[in-house]
Image (cartoon, rainbow, N blue to C red; front, top):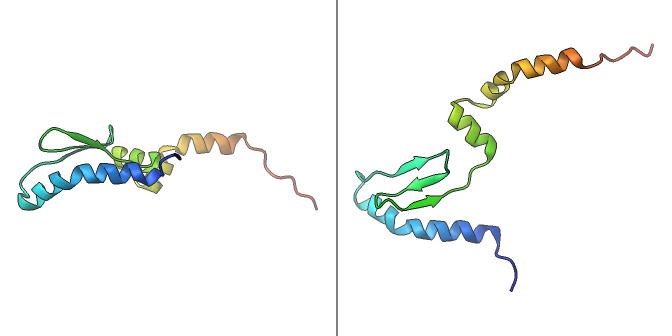
Length: 92
């Protein structure tokens, strides 16, 4: 038997959510908690399901910044790098 395909685990997680989401469609007042830091959806019956998110997107969402905001957070490190680097020597 081979290794499971990466998408299989995601489909298994989505299958676990099919009944709770059906309940949510019937009763939109039910609450689902999204715990981004833990990467979990907490369902009304207190079960939780993990979800994938890339590290950069997670960082930006948790810090409330976009790509430019992320770069601006690194402004001092960028300035330090620019101060350290050697300037090109003209060849003419």
